[in-house]
Each structure stands twice: as C-alpha cells, then as structure tokens.
Image (cartoon, rainbow, N blue to C red):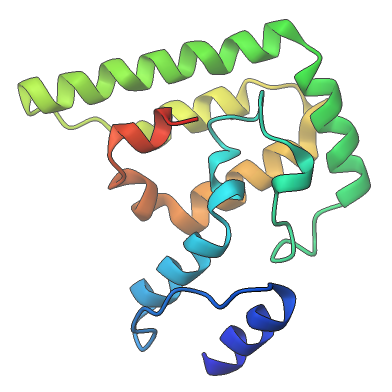
Length: 150
C-alpha cells in the first residue's frame, strides 16, 4: 500500500489524506479522495470538465475517444436533461428515505440512466460502470447533499 501512496505522491503535487490503509475500506477511501472530481462524473457528466477528471487509474480507457464522447454528450440537451431529471429523482428518493425510513438503492437509478445512453457513448458508460462497481458501497452511504453539490 505504501508503494501506491508513493506513486500517487509523485503523480500529484500533494500527499493523499492519511487513512489507515491496512483495511480495504481505508484503501477505497484514499482512492475515492484522489478521484473525487472523477466520482462526481457519474452524476454530473453534463457539467464535468474533462481537464478536472483524474483518469490515471483507468488506463484501459480510450482517453481521446472518451474526451470526444464527453464533448458530444455535453452538446446534447436531451442527454443533459436526462441527468438533470435523474438528480431530481434521487433527491426525492433521499427525501423519502429520510422521512419514511424507506430504503431505496440510488445506484439502481444511476445505472438505469447510464444504461439508457446509446452505445455511441460507450467510453462514458464504461467509466460510469467502473466507478459504480468500485465505489458502489461508498456511493450508497453518501449523503444526498454529496450528489447535489456543484
């Protein structure tokens, strides 16, 4: 784990936060912190700047193709509207969860929205699925305010 942190220190101009990394949870939290802007991508692809994304951990991703797809996506008002509606639905789910003690999984709604995109956005979809797969339990436990801050 120390090797990972040293590698990241070299890639970044600052050191990652100190979390006990003997645990998988600690490792995931460090990675989540390093990728915080990238994690927001799953809910805010309509306003995410390519330059702010840390894609260094996703070397399997076709970066040039990803950037072109992001530009195409962000120029489509129909696609943008879909994510705006999803964020509103998630806010309602969270309100319902807090007021009625009804537990719904927000990841299902997020994944459903991503799956509704055509395959012309396959790179965007791959990154969203990877983030949801890697950080699904972390995302499940984030407060609603995290989804909606911009």
